[in-house]
Image (cartoon, rainbow, N blue to C red; front, top):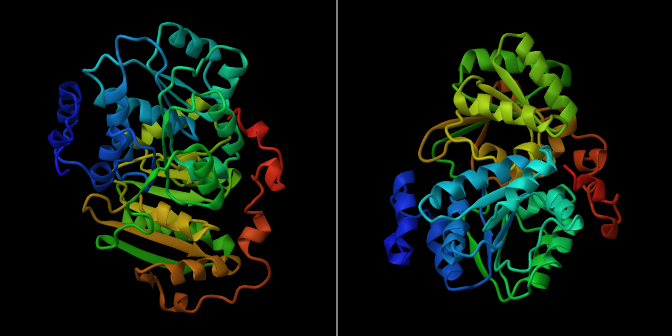
Length: 406
C-alpha cells in the first residue's frame, strides 16, 4: 500500500497525518500497518528514525474505542525520554480521535501520574519499572488491553528490563495483539517473541547499517589523553550546527560535557545519572538549538529521534559494532549530508577493526598516520567492561530489579 488512504484508516487519523505533513508511508509503515490492521502479531526490525512509531500507532489508534474509558493499549519503552517522545507523536497522530494517552515513568511524582490515570485513559505509554510500580500498588489494571507494543526491545535487554516485561505480560490477556520493535535481534529477544507472540509477521527494514550515500565517515588514532584537545580542534574546524558526542560511560559523558563547556562550547549532557528535569532540559536545549553539542551515553540516547544532526563523534568506540551503526545513523537522514568521526585508542583497535570488517562503507583515516591501527593488546573492551554485566539473574548476571525503577 503506497498511500495512507489505501490503508482504509479512519478519517480522523488521515486528518492527523495531514496535519503532521505525512504525505506517503515510509517503508516500515508500508509493510507493517497492513498486517497490524489485520490483527496479526508483528516483529519489526528497524532503527530509530525509520517511522516505526507511526507504524504501530496508526493500527493501535484505529482499534481504540474512544467511548470506552478502559485501558485498551499499552506501549512499553526502555527510557523516560522515549516514552515521552512516543506519547507526543501518538497524540499528534490521534489529535482528532478523542483518544486519551497517559505516560507513566520514573523521575516524576507517582501521585501526579496516578491522578492523570484516574481521569481515564485509553492508552498507557510507560517504562517497565514504573508500570511494575503501578501494578504492585493496584493502581493499574491491564485486563482490557487488546494491543501491546514493546519498543526498542534490545535496549530493554541491555538495561535489564526483560524480566520486568515478562512480569507485565503476565498481567495481560493472552488474546491481545502484540507488536515488538527492535534494532537488533539477540537470542533473548527472539525467545521472548516465540514465547509470547502468536505466529508473528516479521518485517525487516534498514536492519543493518544506515544509507551511506550522504554520510562521510572518518577515524583518527589517538592516545587517550589527547582526545579532548583533538575534539576541540575538530569542532572548531568543522563548526557543525549540531553534534552528538557519544561516550561509553555516564561519568565520562558528564566530565566531557563540563570540559567542553569550560572551553566555550554550548554543551549539554545526557546520561542516566541526571534527574528527569535535567534530562528534559538537555534535550529541550539541544532540540531548540540553544545547545549545539550533546554529550550522551548509548543507553540514555537510544530511541531519541533528533532530526537534522549534522555530525556524530564516537569519542569512545562502541563495544558492539551494531552500536556504531546506530550512532552514525543519527546523521545524514532524509537525504541530508552528515559526518561521523571515531576516536580510536590502542585499547579500542580490536573493536574498531570489527566495525571496519562489518561495514560496507569506507571509513577514511583523517591523517596519514591514522592508516595503521595500533596492535590490540590484552582483552577486548567487551571483556574489560563486561558486556553482559546487565544480564538478568536467570542469565547468571546481577539481579536486574534495581534497574526497574529508572
